[in-house]
Length: 226
Image (cartoon, rainbow, N blue to C red):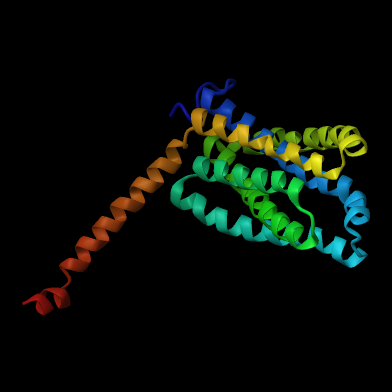
């Protein structure tokens, strides 16, 4: 049970990586969301956007988050939380980085939808990852600790935007969004699926094979073969 419990006070190595990875993911996700807010006025002026067109950017991002939350929640049940978490971080990082090359509103809509998919999936899977790796009495505390990462990300977003936008423009700001790709390397190298998740997948496989055998030996199947 080394991934779920160790001492009553300490954390296992994998639990530390879970908190470090999820809090970092939440920080980088919040940075991305605020980059859009800080860059919006410059984008409107640069691309001559109407108020309605600019407002739709955030709506499309939120729509992507809804889709990502649903799809990656289901995918996490099938292939595991760690693998899914790294995929979501990679998607929103690459989509954010590509915003640096967007020069019309339609490219921005497409990229923000992809960013939303990754960000929505990342948050849901991250919370599930914490829930699977900590006993019930500590889930609330650990979720709150991970959520602090989001607030730290907001502070960094404000500082970075204040430095980059006046000197290099809004396109350059979104290049910072590629940083989370580095996080995916650490996630895949150091983070492991919880024992509960691994057992559940094994049980599902066993159940599938048992049900397949039962179907083969059902009376109507045997009569048909005869």
